[in-house]
Image (cartoon, rainbow, N blue to C red; front, top):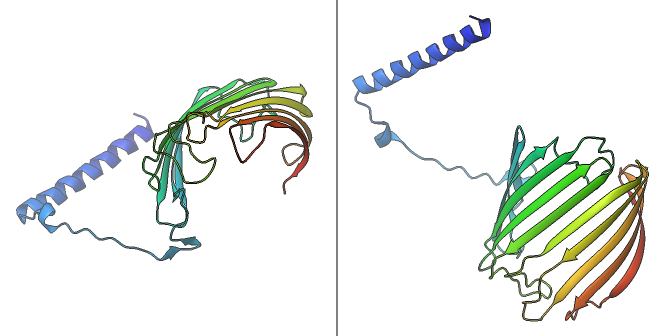
Amino acid sequence: MKKSSMDLVVGASILLALFILIAGVLWLKEVSITRRMVSYTVLFPNIGALQGGDGVMVNGDHGRFHWALASQNGALINDSSQRVTGSVRVNLIGQRELPWEGAYRAGDQTRLTAGIAVSDDDSVSEGLAWNADLYLIHQRFSFAAEIVDYEEGYSLDVPLEQRGDTTPWSATPSSLLVPETYEVALRYDDFDDRSQPLDYDRKLWTVGLNRYIRGHELKWQLNYQYADFSGSEDGDSGSRIALGLTASF
């Protein structure tokens, strides 16, 4: 028998012996654990820099599966409402998705990741929202899609925040024109808000070109957008061109 297997057997034997010993002593003394059990709750005013009302998140990785659970202030930040979100992601092909959009520095490996999440916000009458997304990279090509489904009562008394009973979605294909230098992308957003009281019907098309100088830390971005905000009082349909420089340190 290998040494590691022998160590495992010895350890299990010791734990079993301790369990039998403790159980025997409790039985001889006629001790009832359930009658002696007391529950204590300790509330800390703060934990280091963490204050009351701050958002917290825990997560874990188990092979191809990744999970996360988070709690934060609800949509109405000034009250005591909470938004709790849980998510699960799985790597269907290859490694985990890149920490950025697009195929920059993806290599030749194919990556396919799918995820599902649910969020419950108790600041609205029906604050449940479901989310699903898909992320694919194959050599210099990438594709990302996301869809969210809001319950009927998921709405706020704020213009353009009437999300209840809507299912917005987006899709973004992209391609590296010159590896590690130029990348072009197309994004489509459908807010699916035609059924709302103000009769919104917002859609957004975006064509973008990235010029990487030092990866995503330093890059130029040129975007052309066409917005269709039919029925919206807070925005007009039309197009615009934007040039930006992104720098991070």
